[in-house]
Image 1 (spheres, helix red, strand yellow):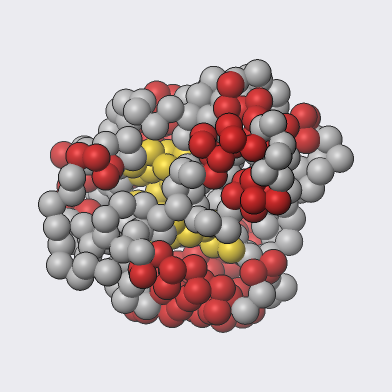
Image 2: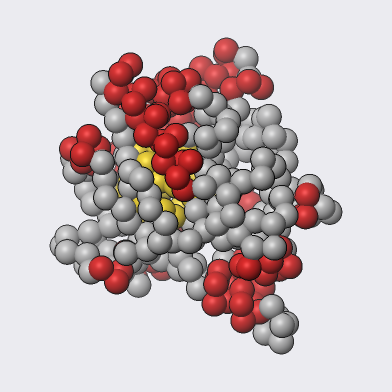
Length: 325
């Protein structure tokens, strides 16, 4: 891996990186720059679509899925299914480091996960178990560069939690940020801020600040959802406006564009007629447009994914998502 920061070439990041807003630049430049330490984003050779293509080379859908999904950089999600979290994260980040590429990881193991949605329930059994898990996660990255999104949905699920549970969750998120700051100095961390239709911007700003957003590099939007890039940018800018007005700071934000090419039809669980996001869309103030959810992976037993479980790769859904029908 090239340890010296370099000037990025246009070909490496034109489709993924967008300029920071002026109010966000100062906050972002105070941290190490994992993007400048690497030569592009890491494409996971072990992603679920890549595995399906390898196992089904004669399927008529395989070439389209390979060329339009599995060959694209995407985040890898880590949770209880990952086994030894230190070994799993270390192996993944090590492979990216050997290729001089930047990995994007998602930590998804907080106790009471998906409390309101219910399709992706689970997580660590106790707060102490979670603290041990996230500490091992951060330590396994070490000094290697990475981007990490911490616990999607965790700040949008408050309506299903008591005040005590909210305080407990905020404590775990603040501790997670502290672990990355202490043990993964070249990692940018993002707390998840839901999507434009979930919680109003002022309330989300309050949730972010309560979870320690001041310590994070930024926040993420639209994970596993379908809202258009423009809608998300307007929401992200509004969240930053509330952070600035109420708490005196703003943060960069990233948008998950993996499934927002046709925008949202109002449904969140495996709606039909959706499309992969166009990487060249204008970000409207976003720091980056990233594929954080894998196109074709189910949201749960619902919609066009009826009979599936959350995270299961559905080739027909992936194939239709390429073409938007």
